[in-house]
Image (cartoon, rainbow, N blue to C red; front, side, top):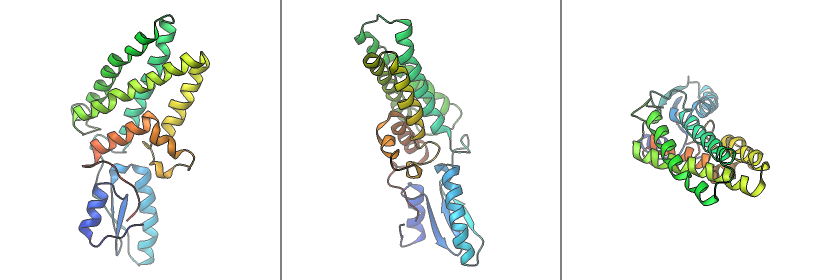
Amino acid sequence: METYPDETTARRAVRDRSVYAAYLGQGHLLCGGANGTAVTATVTTAFASVAHAEHHDLSVQDVAPAAAGDTRGLSVFYAAFGLVLAGYLFGMTTYQLAPRLQYRWRMASLAPFGAVGGIVVATIAGSTGFGALPGPLLPLALVAVPTGAAVGGTTMVLLRLSGSAGVSLASILLLILGNSSSGGIMPAAYLPGWLRPLSEILPVGTAVRAMQGLSRYPGLPRRHSVG
């Protein structure tokens, strides 16, 4: 819980995502819709009780709304998930279609794959496409390109080390644990303690945070709380 000296400072904290919401008293709540519906529902429910105790109806002002093409705040998750799924399938398919390809050439193939996949995702989801991720195209692409390549490379390494079992290992690590800990649907702060560290190290969690910072907020995401 944070305390701010005035409304201007609290509003700025919500806008740059230092906090998820700020309660001003007398039923007035500032929130950021770009954090997603899960966060908005949590803070409005919590502070509705506070406002009721003060004998006020809760009045909510969204000072960091989601993009027009991303009304539910889920586009970052789906963009990252698409990159992860494509990278996983690419890494697996290279072994199926070219099992005898030299390892160095297999890894080298990640460069064109990552470039094409990243540019496609950034273009379609970004301001030049559906406008779901309204950040600048080039920085979004620079995040998306290594994400797909990292997932593809991890899949290839697991297949090389574990053989056919690498397919299951990659799917559990990258698709199941990676996407569930990404913070795309609900923030990492909402996750069980044992799952939170994965959000910091797996490619999808890193991509989600970077895309959120670029497309929804003027600065990089920092620590999260309620003001």
